[in-house]
Amino acid sequence: MTLNIKFAAKPTKDTDTVIIGVYADNNLSTASDALNVDTANLIESFLGKQESFKGKSGQIITAPVLDEGKTRILLVGLGDPDKIDGSAAETVGGKLYVALKSIGSKSAAFILGDDEEPENISTADMGAHIAMGVRLRGYSFLKYKTLDAEDESPELGTFTIAGKDNKKSAKTYEPLGHVAAGMLWARDLVNEPPNMLYPESFAKMIKDELKPLGVEVEIFDEKKLEKLGFKAQLAVGMGSARTPRTVVMRWNGKAASKKKSQPLAFVGKGVTFDTGGINIKPSGGMEDMKLDMGGAAAVVGLMKSLALRNAKADVVGIVGLVENMPSDRAYRPSDVIGSYSGKTIEVLNTDAEGRLVLADCLTYVQRKYDPALVVDLATLTGAMMIALGHEYCGTFVNDNDLWENMESASKSTGEKLWRMPLDAAFKKEMVSSIADVKSLGNGRYAGACTAAGFLEHFIEDNRPWAHMDIAGTAWVKSDSAICPKPGTGFGVRVLDKMIADHYEGK
Ligand code: BES
Ligand code: MN
Ligand code: ZN
Image 1 (cartoon, helix red, strand yellow):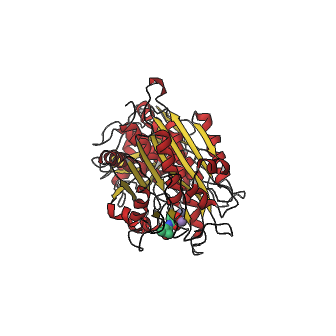
Image 2 (tube, rainbow, N blue to C red):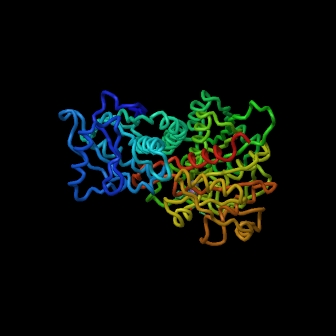
Image 3 (tube, rainbow, N blue to C red):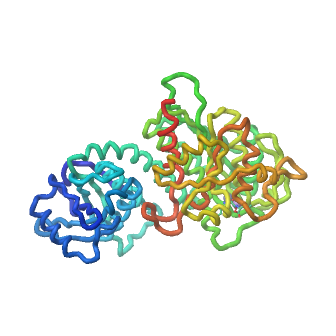
């Protein structure tokens, strides 16, 4: 069942749980429209008797019931009115979802207070972000479950933001809802098992989803890739019976102005399963490697968000889809392979496959579309996870303006980016003695940086470029405030926001 997010002046008739916000120090956010004076007084006096509930952000308590027991009241802490912002409100929404699910609510309504406006966000916008938190945390991936779990409570069917400012909330929610749709699709794709999602099936899923939304979708099969010369991506795919695909997507949102513009390009690593190949990975944890297409999932999720909100930007997305398998046909460590760029590559470890796939897609998109900038997303290195964990996405950028735009989008969406160094030394380290470049650095240190140094060999004409290593942020090992494990859809939101704030209408 999908969760319905609604905006209305009053809680709908079927509401079983009314939610009221409480600022720090139990300062009730009253809503005269929705709460009569008696009820407000009742809650005030109830709050006055609480020892441990202090209105801390995300704290939740149930209060005496309304309507002779038909409607529950949940009081939720909003924290200090000076501190709450969009991200904090989403966390509150996420916690609310978990509480509502555990008490078995089917229809809940959050009442917009009409007295105190927080410092950094309007009450109406706070409501929109609470709804976003509910939507993101309320995601689940249950398509392969056929048995009803005994202890499952019913799904929350409706979440309403109620109050006189509900229309303002709805307006703020509109673009958030579109970006949520892109993120949740990206999560679905990451969560799909690799026997279901492999290059051919993934390409079809992309086409089926995006074409009806007005995105042009082109699929290159193995033959076409051979003709075009995607030699590095094909080398990675040689070991698998599931042949590679590359998918190119175009969203022409500026078309009206007719003026030919340089599009923005987004490139995603889509390794549908990474065994490591001949340099096979150890057994423990290998099951996590279904997430190795998280970069591709983010790119296609972004295309979906852009199309849904009819973004006024020209964007090209490209994802290299391939399965990395060991077999008698697989590529080997020490192989020298070609690439779309013409550069030769010495393969030193078949588990460093993502950079090979990206290299071909990066060159192709630059030469074919002459983009104004290129951003790639890839679950590229374990080293990135060691450095920044699941919290931050290490971002390598060769252009300060581009970085500023990414950083401001990061701050306003809560998808955290941390700038990492691109340095001539890392690039130089990737020069090979037998071929033009080699796929591994000299030792095991700075593995995320040498990977970026390798990619830099495939950036042409000093084009503004960012490489986002999402190895840690594409997935989580345990549920977080606004995301159940594992797939997160990371990248969709920050890039959608960057485009909206900095590249539309220009
Ligand atoms: N897909 C992995 C990186 C990865 C590891 C992503 C853990 C998410 C979680 C990548 O293809 C890989 O295997 N990288 C190697 C590179 C090494 C051989 C230079 C790594 O990080 O060990
Ligand atoms: Mn690998
Ligand atoms: Zn990989």
